[in-house]
Every structure is written in C-alpha cells, then in structure tokens.
Length: 217
Image 1 (cartoon, helix red, strand yellow):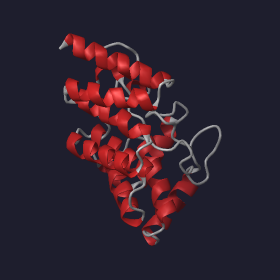
Image 2 (cartoon, one colour):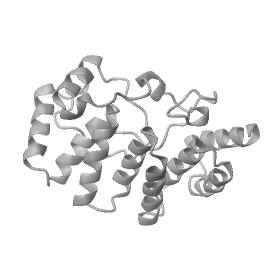
Image 3 (cartoon, helix red, strand yellow):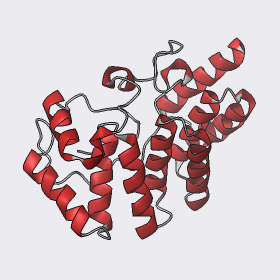
Image 4 (cartoon, rainbow, N blue to C red):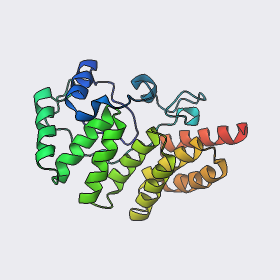
C-alpha cells in the first residue's frame, strides 16, 4: 500500500484489518487518533473546520514519495495478510537496523493513524538513513497530528534544506503555520510554493484556504 503525495487515509482499509493489526502491534494501547478516518480522508473542501487536526478549510498535509515501499504482502482488495504483518513486526524486532523493513512498518502505522508508533519508527529510520526528505516529511506529519507543531515545522524546514525542490515540505509548513494562525508567515511560504508548483491543483486549493483565513482574521 503506497502513500499518495497528500495525507489521506486510504478508503480501502478494512475495519477488521485495522483492529487486528492494532492488536498485533505493541503500541496499540496508546491513545487512538483524534480524528475519524472519514474526516482525515477529506480533500481540501473549502469549508472551515472540516479537515484535519485544526487546519483551516480542511487542508490535508502533503506526504512523502508516492513510490514509498509498499507494506509486505500487500493485497489489492484490502490490507496485507495478518500473518505477513506479524512477520514484518517480528522481523523488525529481530533486525532493528534493516532500514527498509523499519520504514515499511512505519508506513503501516502511518496509514492507520497510529502516530506515536509511526514517530518512533520514522525516527529510528532517520538514525539509520539520515536526511531522507520523504521520511522527514512523514515524521513531521506524524508530529503535526499529535499537535507537536514545533517539531513538525523543524522537520519540514530541515527537509526543505536537504532537498530544495521538495514541494511537500513547503506545503506542510504552510498547513502548520495555519494551524498556529501565523497568517503572514503562511502567506510568505505559500508564495514560494506557488512558484515551485504553479500548476498543482492541491497547491491552488491551499492558497485559497490561506486567503480565506487571512481575510477572516
């Protein structure tokens, strides 16, 4: 299962898969996600307060590489087979320095909004493979979803320094600045993002949301 460039929960995840995976995953007892999958799956809607984690207008943060490694044993009609998920978890426990496997397990937790476990796994991946802009962005999104906005901004800005053309870093920086009601800063970063991605419809929708929030302030 691959993550798209925007942070949407994939509608094909089955409730049974999520429940069973959380049972197997050691971090399942942590606080559940603050938003329902239905809310998190909304595209930029233009309706104030409709979207993720306090972002005005329902902006969905932009994630990492759309070609991020798929989870082991992915199935076209739903989630990976539970036995193979358990195998991946067991493998990572025994081989904590296998960066590819760590990222796959992190991606699984990201996709089911198990943010704290995703944070741990992405952080460990970056210890093994520093300065990966996609993973830095995904980790930043995970921090944003737990309202750790300063950590999220730091990661997005570091990602931008590592890969200046990584537009997702700018996109997410704008979203968090809007979370913090820092409208002037959001507008400045938005201008950079529009120059970088002039034909991107998601960027255009985000620009509209920035303008709405500035006008409402």
